[in-house]
Image 1 (tube, rainbow, N blue to C red):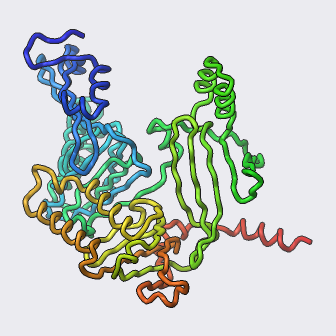
Image 2 (image 1 turned 90 degrees about the vertical axis):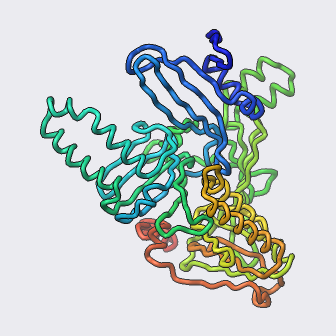
Image 3 (image 1 turned 135 degrees about the horizontal axis):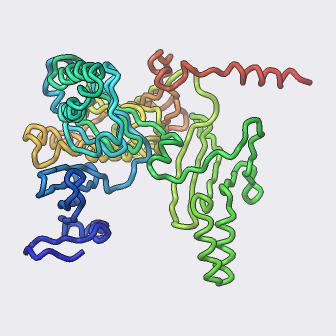
Length: 486
């Protein structure tokens, strides 16, 4: 596509725009691209403008705006240019009646996010509204406008259905005006959506967030390579694991290592054709190597260390999961940090653990950051980096001065804690008792700064962990039958 004659205006094809936006330096050097696009309303060509930018402390996004000079059609949307998050996220915002400031909270909705209002049994699927940067009120009113657009045609074809939609639109419009209380749910398998928390870094009693593992269907919808299950009903599962160097505790699961073996053989023989054939025929995850190692940490429990390496791209990842049965009680760990040695204590934070630092008025729900192995200092730094990345609206150019000052005060207090200008307290509350803080002494009882309390989980905690609906009667019966047989 040729360049336009207007000075300062560059019209390029989509591939050139995408390639130039791929590099950070080029994206900042030539941030704006204009592309001729077909107008879906009149059929003539309009102009789409692409701008790749970074929301401060959030993520890279691509802003797209379309305008047709022939019919006046305009449209804009947001697409995420960064990577998908390791887990999906589900935000739940309680909107009380008459509090319009809650309706003005900013919302980042990605292309894969679903919005629900349970009180009206209303759902906005991902394809209904593309990625957008709006507010709670803006998303509701946009849904009202889209449903209202075809009402005249519906009244001619199906008057009863049109009347029912009018009644529903009245209820939906009342929510957007703050005339009734409701719940706003934002569920995104990609983990790239967000609802503003004006109280950050403190928790918001009206806003809760939950992180979850994606299902096979969600992985496929996001474009991941998902292998369909190959086992037929009634077939016995086949264990392809083998021992590594005679160690029965370390398992090697190559996921079909034919591709990796063929690739290494072709490289050793120096045959470029076989190398290309092996790389193209056996793609990931066949070339991945997964090592599972069972360990027992003193004063803690058995854990599974999982390490993944890829021979194709060099990707490496390690993760730690608790092993054994689910404990009957939860565990609350309280550490009084007083000196530099306390900052270097080893910490295991599981997926189910929540973290509190009372001196910072900082509280993180379970699931935040996932499961990590770090130190006390590393845990606090990771938490603060995550808060600054997620709550990017608090530091933008349009942020109110009092909000900026709140974050500056938070960073000042954080610096004082990490420099140990004053003692502070770290609390890790884990309903599955799968978290750990290393003691400073050989005996756990001699460590006066570390307190471990066990407690009975509440019904709500068991419900969140999925324990209330867990039925193990069949497994227990089979286990007892096996043990009673001679």
